[in-house]
Image (cartoon, rainbow, N blue to C red; front, top):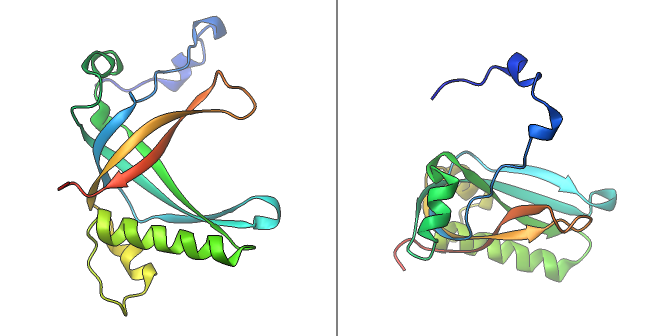
Length: 158
């Protein structure tokens, strides 16, 4: 594949620029591409987040073949899975902790015992695989703009 020359791209007419297609909706085998990152979002950083970059390995049978053909090579794509922790609501925070634990242990199969800190599982999750159901979510301010969203995950062997 040829590299894109950025200086040449700057000569592109604005009317010729279109939004690229999104990865088709459906279920994919994915792998954690790198160590998850942590961010804070919301008013006064109310939410602490763990962001997983999931590299697409292959589509499953529920992804439309025509949509895949129109999109191109999905294995060059990735999607972000974000786990959000509400620091102002103890019950929601605990629910997020449990969901993250389930994702790491049950879906990705990262090994650890009851004494293993979650940060160790996060550090060890790179290259672990699971199934991810990808959907499109409209932008809150402009419903014509769609974003990829990981709607759910499951173990590969299900």
